[in-house]
Image (cartoon, rainbow, N blue to C red; front, side):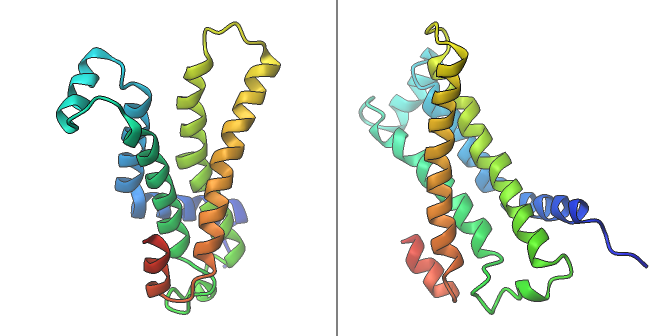
Length: 167
């Protein structure tokens, strides 16, 4: 009997993370889309109903918090310092687990943020280099958020510490 190839184990872990966190990712994607499209006439009525004012200051913060929540939940489910998760005894191997988690976070957090935020600078007659620089700035900002939350979560050794970090 042979073990699964590394890439198959990575995809298996990414699919497992999707099954565990699909609801939170879906809410985050909806918030991200609503944030970028809050000036559309039909959607602005919805935001007026949800808030007593039509500013949208909370709209800039809420998607960031949900992106951080996705990273926090994904990393804390197999935290290497937490003995309760038993991530070191999983048959996939720790390398495949963390590459699969990184793939999951790139697909569900980084790429949607890049795609949705790239609509802001369309139609401004920007060159390819300028669009790549703007895309790099989005990837850097979202990647920095993910790495800070992920590394802080990975250092927690108990569910109470994860809860304290979330608060």
